[in-house]
Length: 149
Image (cartoon, rainbow, N blue to C red; front, top):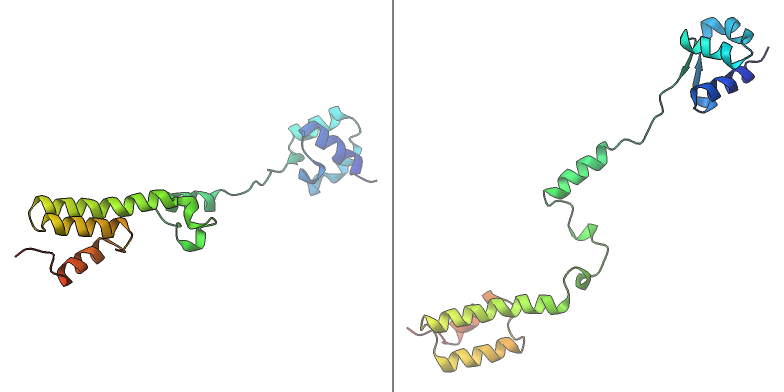
């Protein structure tokens, strides 16, 4: 006799799929005789029929990656999907760039390291995008004698 019907009934009783129903191989004769849902329920009570545990997707790797991201990892060029201007706009990038240079120039002018005319000349070059960075600005001042002795 086939036990397909018993498996189907057990799935209904246990509220799971037929593939998740486990039948005890030592008590197959007893299971074959069960015809009603009440019979199946009594076999479930006796642990002759068991619902297997469902296997979910493990979140171990996700948790591990989230921990790394919280520590500032995984943000390199290989992980970036968008263009450069999507993360920081051109305008914001320019503002940050020019503010550092202007702050340096103002600081040097206030400390009387550079003169007013030198300050104005460097300020206008900076405004025109002549200097790549703060370091480039310092090197230019040293080479062209803008720093007072």
